Length: 432
Ligand code: DLL
Image 1 (cartoon, helix red, strand yellow):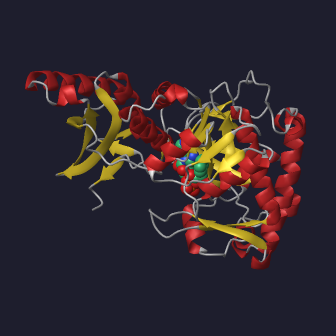
Image 2 (cartoon, rainbow, N blue to C red; image 1 turned 90 degrees about the horizontal axis):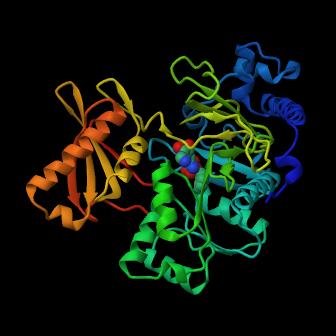
């Protein structure tokens, strides 16, 4: 199922021509209306009118989160505020908030791209969509809301939180599609199981999950517990919000909406492009944004590009799931470790619950990581010997996967914090 087949399945040569034309007009727009870009282009001797090939993209300057912060709140807008109909902002948990804006046209484009992502999962106008992402400055709630309305689905704008009520509404309103973070979906599933709710009596068929990294094992767990098709969708507020990329029913990588975004993958150290199919930091250039265009935005998200054709017929390249963020990456004794690697191992081990947290501390000059893992009650109250065996087993599996040893601590079921939005997997005590 496609939302815009002519676009989503277009020939690559046509796509590249379209990308070039759109890039040219974006460069013109930012050079004319955004002093930050005008200054940068001048410093680097870039003539935005003389841009003739997509391959020249790498001559353009990067834009970073810090640049957005330095221009807080409206400094990077390319249209006057009177043309802006919506403002969103990032939460600012890692510093000052960053602000983004949308023109009427941007909202239309955004809804359309989210509509593509929803349609690729199988969601249509007969569906009842429960949006359990937060509504507000976060782009998740409103982004998915407008996209769902665009396809004509019946939208339940419940927002996040109040899990009991979410479940009640899911039952009463015959929700067919759940939209939230993967960790919140799992929290809901667990609560339903705990309360002996018959999952098969629900009308639920689809789940679109995004907003945070999750592993393939977590997808399996959600699918099994909720008996649904579960797809991954990706986006970030600096670039638009949800709708940047999303999986089709093949569930094997997220189709990038390439007619609206140019993706590059670079090494965060050398800033040079990585080899084909290699993991690196995603760098995104918007091609159609009016109010808030960005040139070569460094996302800090790590993924790789899948170039092979997809059996679904879409010609847009896919990105792999995001394995983590450069700023989530733990360097433990010189080795790079991502929470999703730990998650994959834990999901494979019987007796552990899919809830974990990684605590990083500094002992002397060395970083020490402890993985706190919830275990089922029978194990928690089991003999010490059995518990030790389980700890050793987890440690060994983690050491093989990560290439370094970490400590493991078993904790009682439900003792770790639960999340209704994005989960926090790492507690870094080194910064405290
Ligand atoms: O999280 C936009 C969004 C909302 C996407 C709902 C999908 C669904 P921000 O709050 O700006 O925007 O956070 C963006 O979240 O740079 C990634 O690190 C992470 N992220 C988003 N989607 C995924 C995903 C929204 N599917 C940041 N997998 C991004 C992994 C994701 N990480």
